[in-house]
Image (tube, rainbow, N blue to C red; front, side):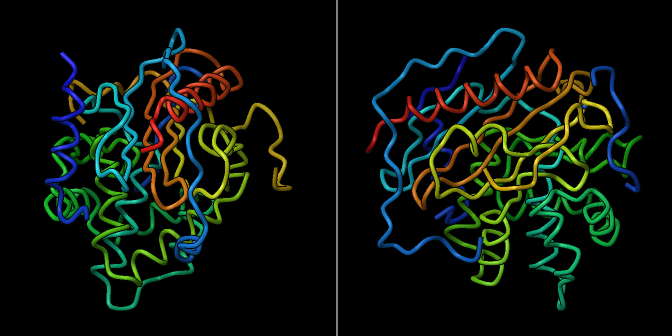
Length: 290
């Protein structure tokens, strides 16, 4: 049974002032400084729209309105997905908070172009799964856990939920030290159209929602070679699915709305990215303006 919006909002409000060795093995189907000025009003969602999850997609999502301080749209908020690159948010927070001299030369590409080698380097330095245990405790995450014991190096196999990732963004915006918040949000606002692996990372929020936004995307299970050329010019446990491809879009819209949309997919990259973009647009439009 899906928890009520009231219950979900309560869980978010209780969050702390929430205010690889290798990356991932192949699976069957082919795999910004601070906010804009406070004077810049955040975009307002269009009138409510009914959200219909496309066929072949399993989704968990949350829209949290920071102005109203409540969840306005949600589905399967506690459903756990393998994180893919969304876990890089936790790796970044852990590194910035626990290292005296953060390695920004490695951290920045990990966030801006979702560089996997950078994530693997920081994952090893931080003690691999110990990073997740530290972050789950510090941010009071209830659905997040390290990769399975037999895959300690695969950071992308960290288990996450939409509600927990919303808590991560709230922590960044409302509790993290300025140097942590500004560094991470600054890079997410500068997210480039193409990931370092050549995949187009402007699906979901970037194509569905008007700017300003700051995003961290995740993808896994679509192979190592992008199905089409990306144009760089701007325009752990049994309940986690480790088999089907995942496609996630998460971020902050303006400085008001937190959107987290996690999915598993059953179709190829081009179709899957169209589906998550349409779903992101529908979820955004379903959120009331206050």
